[in-house]
Length: 129
Image (cartoon, rainbow, N blue to C red; front, side):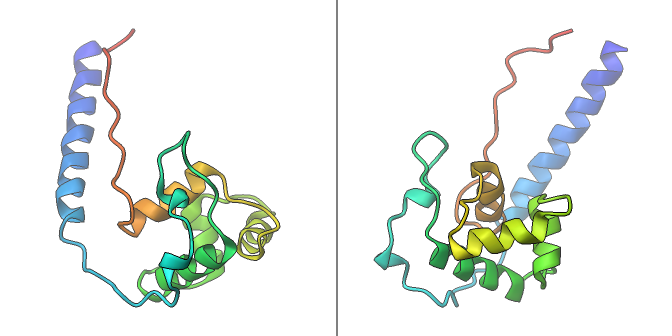
């Protein structure tokens, strides 16, 4: 059984490496309708130093994402971000208006998908049983 688990782990790791290589070939898109220099860049920092983004940044990033991805509606973005449940659309609207701040993990998913921050790869400390 341990040998099978290691095989599955190795296959998943190789698939992840392939995806990371493909990510380097993503197109460059430069049509953000916002001057980011007017805002702090703390929304790009790693967890622990991160600050929630300004609502204008949220709106601009989401609109650009919808224009250049398969996720062309707020409903599709809700699914992509994992805002499951009946309140997903409400939560997204609250992020866009500034009534709520997106959680780090939700925001980070958008940042990684749009190439604004690199994908985090965590070290495996051992194969614990």
